[in-house]
View 1 (spheres, rainbow, N blue to C red):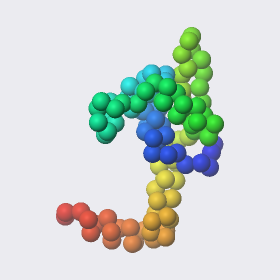
View 2: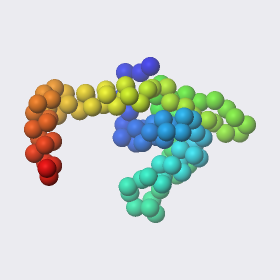
View 3: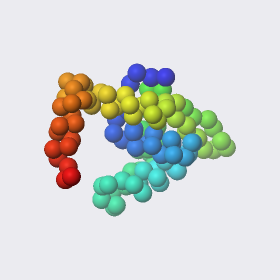
View 4: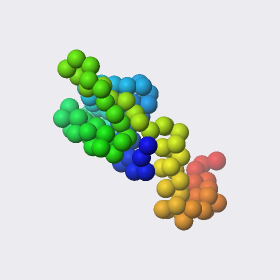
Length: 112
């Protein structure tokens, strides 16, 4: 496992892999481009996603195996633990670990 938390873009790729179990670079690229909130004309290039997955592999977030000419990537971190760690890091960074303070802010910004 890894102690490094994924970046926002890495988290997007991990979500694709968690949902699909495993995927080729092209499949990850297509999935990320179909859910990208950015302008639909500015999708991620195949080589960008390949580079992203290679960096993620160096961080031990994903692994790959070769299938014919394609690389198939699979997650090496669990969804639940990763999201829990990210949430805990956010809580610590933004609210000094205070769940009460977070809840006050969260509830104060919602229409009830």
